[in-house]
Amino acid sequence: MITMGALLLVLLLALILGGAGFAVHILWWIAVIVLVVWALGFVFRGAGTGGPRGRWYRW
Image (cartoon, rainbow, N blue to C red):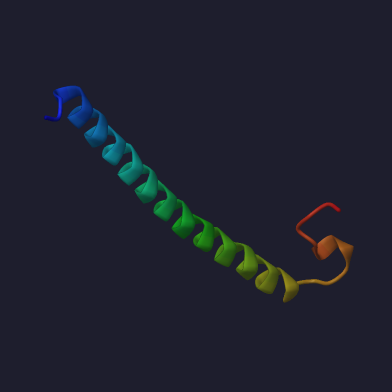
């Protein structure tokens, strides 16, 4: 017979793993969006003025 503590432990573990999976899924979508914005920054900055003053980074 399964005890109440073991049942709560299994339910808590399922809740934690389910929440972690959801968080990782959301973080993947955020990473994809940031990558697209970063790539678009290269495209639009490349169309601007050339030379070292046209760069958006310092190095």
